[in-house]
Length: 325
Image (cartoon, rainbow, N blue to C red; front, side, top):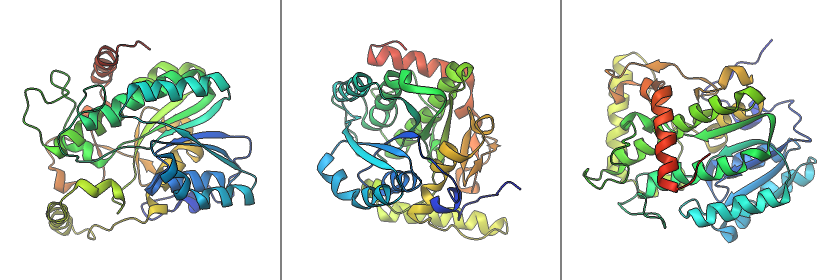
């Protein structure tokens, strides 16, 4: 019987009885939050985990338990420097990995920023679009030759994708008034669309890509979000959930938040998750655009899975970074 997981499942639940010895998995954003737990749980089941982070000193301190669990269970853990807000840094990291030539079974693009004040990356891109999407776009595409046939790419997205579709005419808010959550929504939609397009390009060799929403978790990702604004969002959500006869919103623990990444990367059937959006350890269903954000406890907007938009984003991303894949 296939185990059914859900919103409260943890990384240990989904990896129970799973042997990852011989698997090499790269996880970005291992200096805090669910990135650390993702790396820990995989290494604790025997995987060789490569953790990427901008601040290596912070990541080294944050991953003490990762190394302990890896050593205790036949896994391994190493750190590499990756600054997603600098294409020079992204390319340098990718070049080092390519030079070593060690194959990868799974890439989990976990790192990201949320609702930041208006700013730009080192290359002049709006901070969230540049970091969350373009940095990973270049990095994952550059290391794609290392991904073994049958491998996977998992992009961390968010239910926040519902705030906005991508804007390919004004990706850097040069003509649009900046709103932090709109910018976040654009970048998280881009993460899904990138998975859709990558999956289409690589599925012939068995490499599948998917996007995942980890759920609402209290981590430092939300350090730029005003607490009152967050409470208003939660109150609106709870009012709608109550009207639907559903239980109120519950924060996830970090092991629960990392569970969907681990499930999609190492447990779920590849054909089930390829080119899809996953949440609560299952594939999410498309929710019509006319349903308001606060009314949705689960689901993905159709625009985030649109093939034509995915291809247009791919082309625009290549133009912006000056590199074709």
